Amino acid sequence: MNVLVINCGSSSLKYQLINSDTEDVLAKGLCERIGIDGQLTYQKAGEEKEVSQPAMPTHKEAIKLVLDALVNPKTGAIKELSEVDAVGHRIVHGGEKFASSAVIDDDMIKAVEECNDLAPLHNPANLIGINACKELMPGVPMVGVFDTAFHQTMPKKAYLYGLPYEYYEKYKVRRYGFHGTSHSFVSKHIAKFLGMDINNSKIIVAHLGNGASISAVLNGKCIDTSMGLTPLEGLVMGTRSGDIDPAIMEFIANKENLDIAGVMEVLNKKSGVQGISQTSSDFRDLEEGMDKGNDKCEAAIEVFSYRVAKYIGAYVAALNGVDAIAFTAGIGENAPLVRKKVMEYLGYLGISIDEEANGHRGEDLLISTKDSKVKVCIIPTNEELAIARETVALVK
Image 1 (tube, helix red, strand yellow):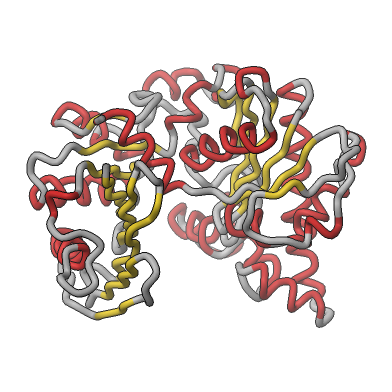
Image 2: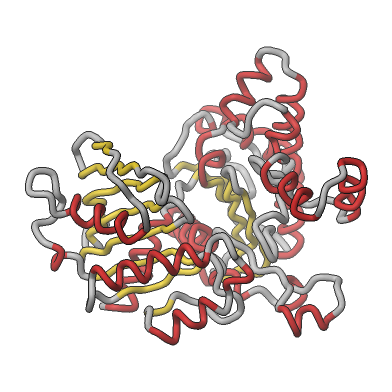
């Protein structure tokens, strides 16, 4: 079965065509600057990337260009669109309505629309992609895979905030968590990689990228995660502040003469390691700056690593122990320095690091020593493959 995976943003669209039988990526790419001028990147497996600048006034045109590229007589991955058996769509927020992936129909779309106020920048864009695909590929089964679904197994003690209960009852203000597709994929994959029984396991997943979150997974089910109602809560991130004293918002607003939108702009786009370092949100730049003696870059790396270690420690308590820890996503997979700094805080767990193994990047690898009481691994995430698997499970 060939599954087209679509990840639709407000002005961009990532895609992969995956053969679900072999799990090979047949083609992949990206549409950018939708509604502005348009840029299409297309890459057939084993071939060089092709970049073009066709007009993309809407997502419908962008998806049409993707479909045309897939069946291009010279470079297409398939001969005709009938070879696309299903489409899997990433949807950011399912609220409490979706605890698992769902086949897309009119009722499902209506339920997603009702969650739009929880993710006003993401859900409407996801729905635009769904509607465009439905129009261009009538009759092809489609599945929605939610960022929030994996975390819906959290108990009430983990997802309730210390706010008036009426806000939960009226507005569903609670912890939801994000990156759920990645956390689900990685927790299952590390169990398989280490030969563990997922149904008798305590796993912590550290999804560390420009957006970063950690989850505690007990017997294959999430019991806590660091992001909250929105992706702003939790770890210090690329440009997001993560956890702060809420009163800081009023303090900054008064000092800088900002309204609530202005403060949120600071917390979401001008904070995190970029805000601390005053240099970059890219850890390669931060490490380079640190090596050159930039104290702010060093501080940003230290703050980030310390916050990760604190959350891991908290989730060891939530799980009442831990069998394995997985580092994943851009930083988790490719920043040995960050992994080392985090693990240096975890010696009390009996963790010891294999320095040589930790120097590797982007591959399934055990990076703790053989005598380490907790197994620590690099596990590359693959959200597109996870979406394809969820899609196949529902439509096959």
